[in-house]
Figure 1 (cartoon, rainbow over the protein chains, first blue to last red):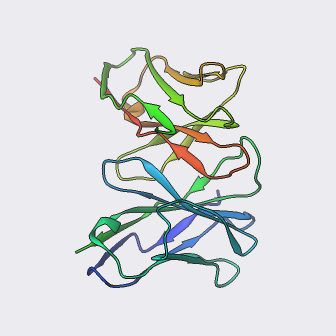
Figure 2 (tube, chains in turn yellow, red):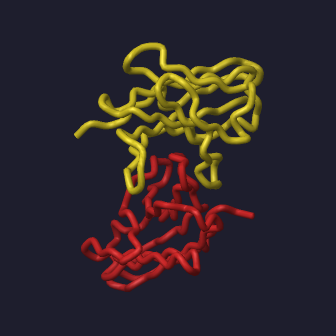
Length: 115
Length: 110
């Protein structure tokens, strides 16, 4: 069964450093997403990406964040100058088409710890 | 105002019990509704979509009341393996991103 993969599974970084979280969506999917979940809190939408551009973003997704699809398979989230409060699980998700009822498939997540 | 609200629980029930979770959402234009399951430190996984007519999948039954903006999940004959956090999830109109509730934690006790 195809699945979304993410690397690394755990990233530890110093405050102020840049990190890049990587995702490989399911191969025939067209819409890609990043979500985050701070420990003990709800899953929060960050950004959606379609046709090589951002289609929506939340208030959380400020200038510190950027996304890129550098080739046909990878989808990355870059966090510049990390802050302590960026510590969270970051989930990538993908979906083949938009529309009601279509399931978003989530990757296993990257646990980011900012020290 | 929260987009999606759920009782966080925890719900501790014995094996074989029936348990129900409720959820309300604030955006009346929301189009799609789901229950996801999340195990500790894992990704959310779709349990079932929720349709206006109500739908059932084995021991799980989901209901949607659009007038009250209310979603429910009923689990019958609880198993130990049902222990998890159940996330109420809503997709807005014209948007593909999902809005998650905080989740309801269920523990099924032997």
